[in-house]
Length: 58
Image 1 (cartoon, rainbow, N blue to C red):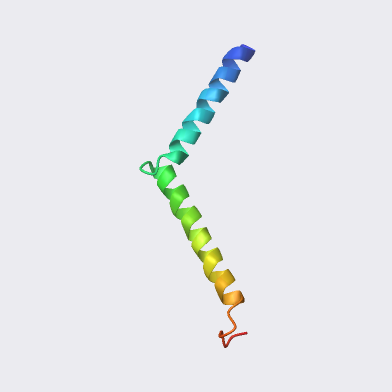
Image 2 (image 1 turned 90 degrees about the vertical axis):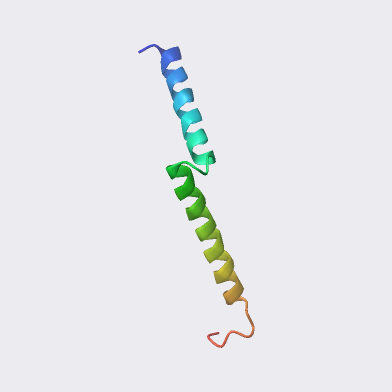
């Protein structure tokens, strides 16, 4: 395979991946967005509870 052809193919694949993940209506994009928001939400909840002076568990 030609080096320029290979480079072009990699660029095309990278563009496809970016497009797929940035499109919230595609399956992968939807999963990615859901996952990120769930992780952020869990992180926010965890950090809130960790520094909550009124939390009886501490």
